[in-house]
Picture 1: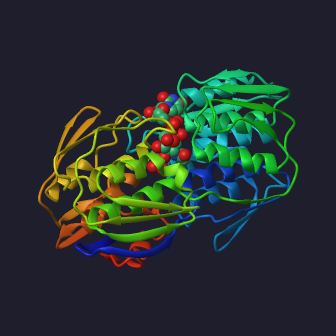
Picture 2: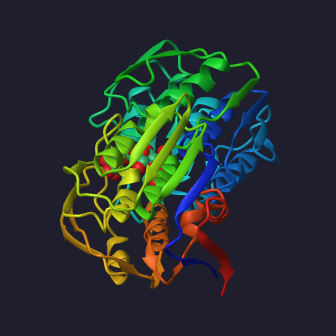
Picture 3: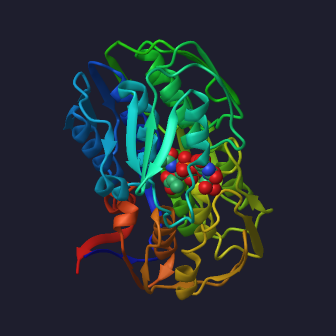
Length: 418
Ligand code: EPZ
């Protein structure tokens, strides 16, 4: 089993280029199923979730090769329409393949995605969107079966702006007959990146980034060469780490407008943030102050995925910082592990109250989920002594070589096999 061993106390100094976005490359890998030819994706991160998505594409019949940060997919011959249970279990967000498989094959079979570390992960909004497009959906023996000889464009009103449901609706609507209008759509940057990929492939889509997206069906047909946007949550993670331990870090190629709510919070806490084009420089003396409540909301609100790292970076703030988690039911599982390091955090349902302590002490902790695990790394960087973080496969799902990235900034961190 691998662990991360971290000796806290080093300031972070230097320059880092931010990896490509996990939550963009995954739906775009799904979208490549719709292209009966070659898609080239650039700036792809090296992640376990990307490996899982590539396994699904290969299972379906696509030819996929990886060359560093470039992934080449040839989906000319897609011969299957099912995602095996083993692959579904590897990655909960495999549900994002549903709309593309249905659009390409007229049928899609996948095992119902179990819950995950963040609580139950229903897909009612995904299925409702596909039904609106004419899909017949049944459940048999733990499998979800979607069928449609030909999807028909429709009005799809999402009762909540689900990122995945928006993406599935877009991917199915591209292959439908006629016009689809998605209202109350998610507005995340990854939705805009997916639209850019699909438009480059020949789809007629507009509106991504706003609450209404319009798709004129008719499929896609052109070879695509697309660069994945930077990962805004990884950006938020390294900014939070620098704010917490102190130092001066320049993050390159990170699309600052995508993390405006995070940089605003870190500035309010006392960090100095400078933005130049696509680069962000953060300077901090490591002595932060409490800020007004941090409330997670759908984009462009404060991102739920950045909540754990900002909580970790707030544990020594002078005063008390309140966090309200509105997106996932169970996103504070990592807090118990922070308490083992000496953090003073009270939980009451969706509310976390973080009261500043003088310091943290290194301990043996376990990653509970992807972003919770990253929060433990942030805390360990600012703790006295040694911390070992176990269950780091959670972290590897979303961070490309986190230890190399942080070591390049001066952190004392290494991956060990125990
Ligand atoms: C995407 O998950 C991201 N994952 C998540 O990132 C992110 O936290 C989330 O969007 C919110 O921004 C990927 O893009 C691969 P949702 P997704 O559908 O699509 C409920 C990370 O750490 N809901 O917007 O699953 C759901 O239970 C991951 O990188 C329904 O009730 O998120 C949740 O409470 C974690 N019914 C809320 O909506 C549905 O049909 C938001 O979910 C779908 C969702």
